[in-house]
Amino acid sequence: MGRLNGKSALITGGASGIGRAIAQLFAEEGARVVITDINTAALTAAVDELAQYGTVSGCTGDVRSMADAGYMVGHAVDEHGGLDILVCNAGITSVMPIEQLSEDEWDAVLTTNVKGMFTMVKHAVPKMIERGGGKIITLGSEMGIVAVPESPAYNASKGAVMMFTKSIALDLIRHNIRVNALCPGITRTPLLQAEVDNSLDPAKTAAAQASWAPVMRVADAREIAYGALFLASDESSFAVGTNLVLDGGFTAR
Picture 1 (cartoon, one colour):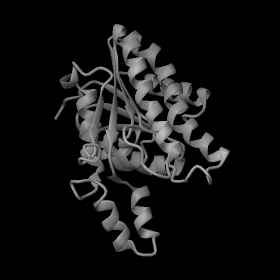
Picture 2 (cartoon, rainbow, N blue to C red):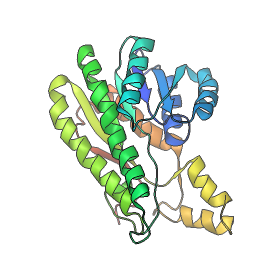
Picture 3 (cartoon, one colour):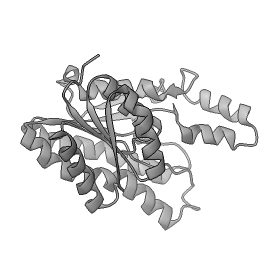
Picture 4 (spheres, rainbow, N blue to C red):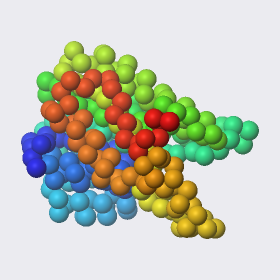
């Protein structure tokens, strides 16, 4: 406990799933956390729930908007007097073969998953420089390393995230800002659970999810959150521009 005592953290897409698990763990470890989300109702509910674990507040915004990104970063700085940790978690998925993939869906995935990181980092970096350094964690994916069929937009977006992370890591380390990517494998989130609940054969769908990785189960979001905690803490002091892959062995194949 206390590995992030006194640190100010901003987590995008923090109302559910991996983002929410990271927010809870960071709060438990002493960070003062601001979570953001495009869904105001979900954000309010998450803040109410997470408040029991520590200092957590919320800010509605859309990472695809440069103006919103500036507002969210400014809110976190105003709330806690500075910004030490940024977790770029907000993102959307896409399962659609190229012949059926629309321009609108392609744009939505790339704009959210890639531009949405650029906008947040763009505004966060000057604030971190003022603090004398910081940590930026981007959310990559096993699918940014190994391509999966019928997911060209998502594969492309996460591949871009990996190189974006490496590029800015090289640029920002001179300012004592460490940038690294956290790359989850298949993880139990509300979205993944919805696939089970809405399928024609929930038991078969759940079994297929469990068999995705060699470990033969789906990750709990908290398991992924511990990876974020490592990258956000001083324990990862020699990690710069790396990809921390937590995928149950998927990419090892």
